[in-house]
Length: 112
Figure 1: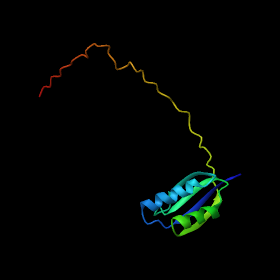
Figure 2 (figure 1 turned 120 degrees about the vertical axis):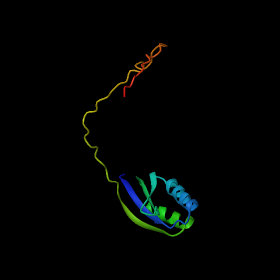
Figure 3 (figure 1 turned 90 degrees about the vertical axis):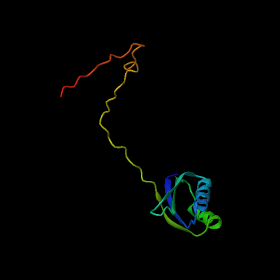
Figure 4 (figure 1 turned 30 degrees about the vertical axis):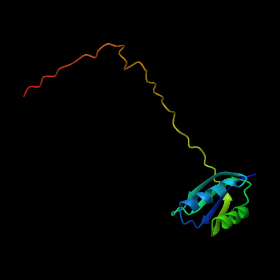
């Protein structure tokens, strides 16, 4: 089955209801991830394969409150960007360790 992204707008009047709504969204079979989206963080975006959007909205309506199904669609697959070859610099761990010898002490004389 193809992965899909479902966006649901939920009226949440507090942090407790938001956590409860997210917990309900994750409990449905087929859900891989769920997160808050939107300008007011009042929408939940759920991604996964074989998710029943009607079941999701019905459960949220029963347990949390007013719920509106905003969109259902396929997940946008991002193609990895080609990066230039990375140059890895390895630092010698003993470079700054002086085996118990004291560092040379320099005195500076300033002439005015």
